[in-house]
Length: 149
Ligand SMILES: CC(C)(COP(=O)(O)OP(=O)(O)OC[C@H]1O[C@@H](n2cnc3c(N)ncnc32)[C@H](O)[C@@H]1OP(=O)(O)O)[C@@H](O)C(=O)NCCC(=O)NCCS
Image (cartoon, rainbow, N blue to C red; front, top):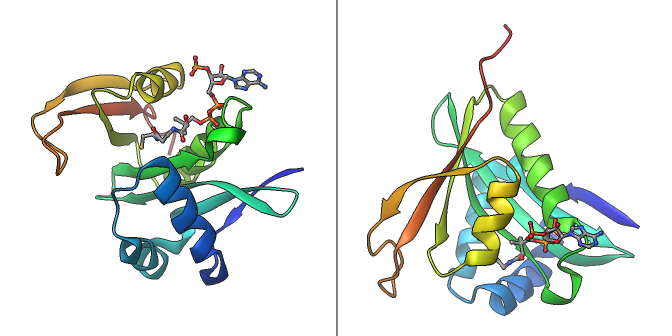
């Protein structure tokens, strides 16, 4: 069964393992910092007790949410798990009052860009040499629309 739940410190080794296999570019310490500073926006996907993906998102201002990282283990991709995690974090940011969500994605990451576009994100601009290795990023944005209240 696929469950989305909040990160707990005991999940740290699983998250670091996924990060290494999927990105291998973030300092593991960052993830403990996320837990300390924005634990509500740090969520995991679990299948039959195995952590298979995670997402980290937080508000950068009252109106803007940012997704820092979203990853699913390669052997669990293309089953809707990334979409589940993305929908959870968007709902969380919407409930917190954000009316836009932004994120960055490598220009070479065609799959992720298409995935985000399918979920309503669009490319705002190119961020030159955004990553440590010099690669550019697309800044992408999702509008959550006007709030009713
Ligand atoms: C981007 C990423 C998070 C997507 O996760 P995912 O679990 O594969 O996402 P989903 O399964 O929801 O969607 C992926 C594709 O599978 C398809 N899919 C979803 N459920 C499916 C199902 N039950 N059967 C068949 N296909 C399915 C979707 O249509 C989607 O197609 P698209 O890419 O053409 O839009 C994942 O590929 C990943 O971890 N990539 C490496 C890290 C990364 O690039 N992160 C994003 C940058 S921060």
